[in-house]
Amino acid sequence: MATHKQGDVVLEAQKSKVKPPRMFKVLLLNDDYTPMDFVVMVLQKFFSMTREQATQVMLKVHREGMGVCGIFPKDVAATKVEQVSSYARQHQHPLACVMEEN
Ligand code: TYC
Image (tube, rainbow, N blue to C red; front, side, top):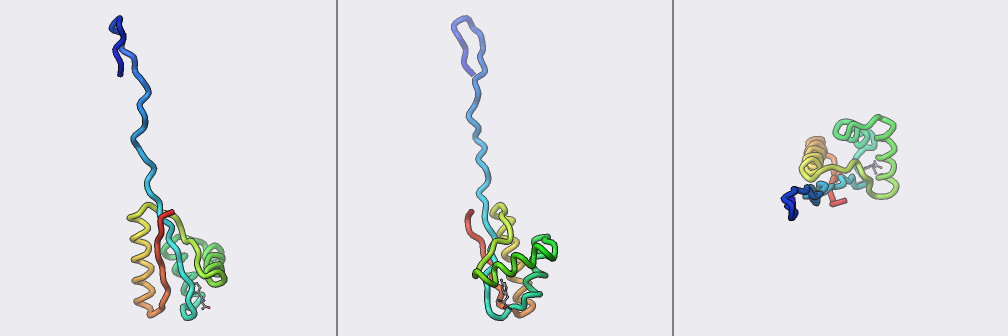
């Protein structure tokens, strides 16, 4: 806000202080042991994918070594990584899930 000579008050545009949140990719890594069906199930369960979407992502990971499950704010990404890792451990599969800043 600036006050001019005549006492007029002028409202000046303020620079926005709101920054977009840092976003993180959640990635699945390939391995030789986790069954394909299990990976598809994980993608449906924790990333709300359809069976068709989940199959595409699983095959990409299988062929290319890694693939993106989704992009989320830091706390959400960390929760997904923990949920997937814990679920894979419970089922004794070596499936690895990691996050990296987008
Ligand atoms: N490579 C595994 C197999 O041949 C399948 C697999 C896909 C494992 C994706 C992990 O993140 C993964 N059974």
